[in-house]
Image (tube, rainbow, N blue to C red; front, side, top):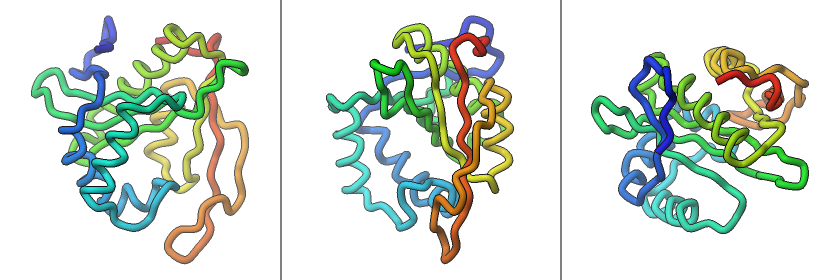
Length: 179
């Protein structure tokens, strides 16, 4: 488990379990999540989610996945990921999925910071980057609050709901991050 020393929001990072698939499956099928996740746009079956969760938990692929757990209720509030980890270039891609019932309460910001702290301290990464749709200002604000800076625009990078959308690339360097 990973918790922050001075955090005011009751959240910690923990290992994912197969039991979490029932919750994450519901989130992945919410329209807002499907709209902003570039990975998929159609509904996910519970069988697909369980298979994904099993693969994620047991993966030898360079991936670090955490459940975001509320310490006050022990409920799963979301998940964070460090993926496409390159130990040669000391970088990884960050991603987060937060249940809408947990949005706007500070859980995303704290979980983001805890994941970045893990990436820089435990994995000795130098750069953590992400992609975010430019029409997702709430996510962009959270990322900027956590130290990410805009690096560029990937024009017409995602095709969703019959049209193309731009994505921003953002990154934070180890020496810029302050937990």
